[in-house]
Amino acid sequence: MLSQTMCPAPRPRFGDLNYRIDLNALAVQDKPEFTSRGSGDGSGRLSAPMAELTEDNVAAAKLQALYRGRTGRLKALVPHPEHEEHWSAVCNLVDREDWAALLAADQLRKSIAAGAAFSEFCEGDPTFAPTFKVERAEGTNYKEQRIPSYTDRILWRSMPHLQGAIRQISLASAPSVSTSDHKPVISTFELSLSNPPALLPPPARSTQTNAPLVQLSECSIVGNFRIQAGVGDTTAQPFFWCYTNPPGVLGGRAPKSGVIKRDRMGGPMSALEKPRDASSWTWDETEVPLLRPAVRGSDLKHVSLILCFYDKDTISANDPLGTVTVQLSPPPSAGPGANQYTIHVDAPLRYYNVTKRTGRFRCNLNIYFGAALAPALARAHQAGAGTKVRGLGDACCGVM
Image 1 (tube, rainbow, N blue to C red):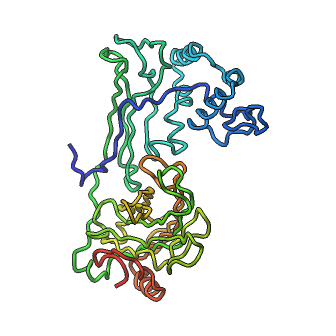
Image 2: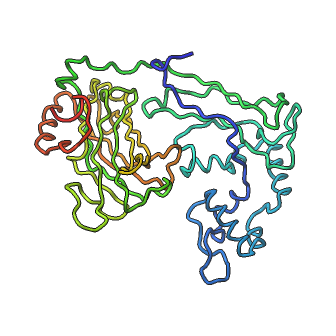
């Protein structure tokens, strides 16, 4: 057993995830006549091309066809309209060991690519037959009630600065196990041991003479948060907390941004900047905390910054909007030995395991240490950066 302080501590997800192989969805993804909306002329024809092939769009098209009595037209668009035919086509791919073709029609892979589920998770490519639905006997003999599918999966996810610290060694099934209508899946991994960066000693942290400066600028959220229940695009009041991995790099209490409010009556509500439009919110530099990670500048490559976004609610608990995680290592353009650099962030909010229709966060992370630190602190102090931030904890955050 590896201790958490010595290994990347990846987040595994495994089990019967119940995603299926769908050759029909794969076949129609490039057909312009397969759509999720009607023509609007009352004929029930499917006319507008689908913007993207997703489970939601496919399901919507099927329901629409059923509602309008157009099941015949829908069946004409897919290569395997009947279950028996679809089952046989998948079994033929299994017999040919065409694993790539099976994975191309896998619902989970499409959901991950679209950000609809398990966003940012990794998975190895199976080189074995689908593990469901099989007879309770040795070998892999499929029952005709269900399309053979890779329902049993092993996924993992790591922090950005630890992406290369985990490697999958093997991925296999166990066809000899006969106790279920699923065949077990087995995987082994190799974890590279790594020590967390050493925190600066308390005197350096309190005086902040050595702690780098991480200054967020041009921070904004764009999007309607459509996936998050109960959060409207015109009434949201977003703010964010700042955390790190490894934990504790920013001190004992997480720094917090200001709350961006929107005046429902159209007039000025506070000194906070109003959104530019119904689906955009922007933080002024005074409303964003200045971060002072308690590590050496050269150790920032071992740290990931985690921004946790919420919608402020004055009556009940704040609604989570999602997270954005950024590795603080310098970009290739910074060059060796650089003591200041900028990381441009344009990333979707990760709402649990979903990044589809969650809004995007954009900002610049300006990082200074060494000889660049003192001038950067002076400029930030002169501009009033972070002066309106509330709820800060230790002295490792903000301008001293």
